[in-house]
Length: 508
Image (cartoon, rainbow, N blue to C red; front, side, top):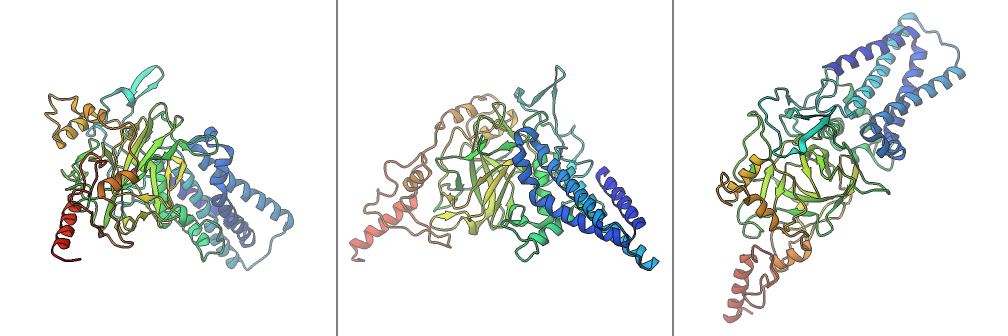
C-alpha cells in the first residue's frame, strides 16, 4: 500500500530528526503536536462549513484538518522557541533515548494526520492503495453499466463509461476490516476518542464518539463510506445549511418499520432481488428478505432538493450514514414501490430524481413503543455535509406508497422485479415495471392517517412488541372505508367478532 509506505517513511524521518535535536526540544515538539492535533480535530469540520462547502466541496474537511494542524503546530513551536531559545543538557544516553521516544510520538501524530487527510480526500474506494475493506480489482467480471445513459461521463468530448471497483463486504464487518501496516490513523483517532469522552480531559459539548461512534474503526468506516458509490464527475457532496437544503425528510412521513405477520402490514417477508451484478464472492440474495436476527428493517424516506445533483442525485449506500443510540448504520438496500426489497452493496451507484426509500436494519428494541421514536441524538449524514436531525421521529408501522421516492433501476434489475412480483413475463412484458410505478401516488398519504386507517387505532405498549387491541363496536369497523390499498388488518376483524361473542354470552 502506497499510503502505508508513505506514513512509515514520514514517521521514521520525523523520529530521526527529533532524535538529533535532543530530549528537551523533542518534548516541546511533542507537546505542540498533541495540542495541534486536538485543535485540528476539534475545529476542522466547523472551519470547512464556515469557509463554504460550496467552494471547497469534498476537499473542505481534509484541507481544513491539514491546515489547522500545520498552522497550529508551527505557531506554537515558533512562540516556544522564542521564549525558550536555549537547550537543556541531560546525560547522553538519557537524552538520545528520550529524544527518540518523543520523536516517535510526534511521528505517529504527523503520519496519523496525513493518513486521515488522505482518507478524507475523494480518492475513491482506495486511498493511495489503502481501503478499509476488501475491494474487487478485476472489473471485467462485474458488469455494472446502466441500461440508460446516465452513467456515462463526458471527458474531453468522448463519452466513456465509469466502471467502479466492487466492495466485497458490508461496512461495519469486523471480520473483513483491513488496517494499514502501521495503523497510525487508528492510534491518533484513539487519542481523540479518549480525550473527548465524558471522562476525558478535553470533554466538550459534543464528544467525537457521539458523531462517529465505534471508536477509531467507526471513524475510518465513516470516511470509507463517504468515498464510495459516487460517479466520476458527479457532485460528491450534499449540503444542508442556511442557503440550501439538499436532503430532507419526507413531510408526510419519513420512518417506517417493515412489519410482517398477523399484526403487521405484510403477510410474509417481502420479495427480494439483487440491485446490481455483484461478483460471485458476494452472498446470493434470497427470494424473500428477512432482516438479521434481533433487528427490524426500517425504511428512511428522503427528499432531494434541486441543488443536490444535476437532475439526478447520485450517491451510494455508503454515503448515507445513520447514527442512532451510539451506533452507526449503513443502508442494506432500497425499497421498491413499497412492496419489494432491493439489496445493494455499499458502493452501488444509485440515481434518484426526487427521493429514495433507504432500508436500514436497526435493533428491534428501537422500533418498539407506543409510538416508537428514535432517540434524541439520532441523525443522518448524507454525502458529508448534509446532516438531518432524526431525534424524536416516530417510526410508523405502515409503509405508505410514494411515487417520488424511486431510484433508477438497471434493465436486469427491472426484469428481476417483474418476475419477483409476478407482474408478467419479463422477457415480453418490459413495460410492467413502468406501469407499476405509474400507479403509485405522486404524493403519499399522511403516514399517521394511513397507519390509523390500516391498523384500526391499535397501540403498541411501551417496551414491548405486542399489540393491544381496543375491540371495535362492530366486526366490520376494524379498518374503515378509508383503509389504504391492501385492506384492513384481518386480525382486527377477528378480535372484534370475538368481543361481540363475549357480549352475547354474557362476558360483560
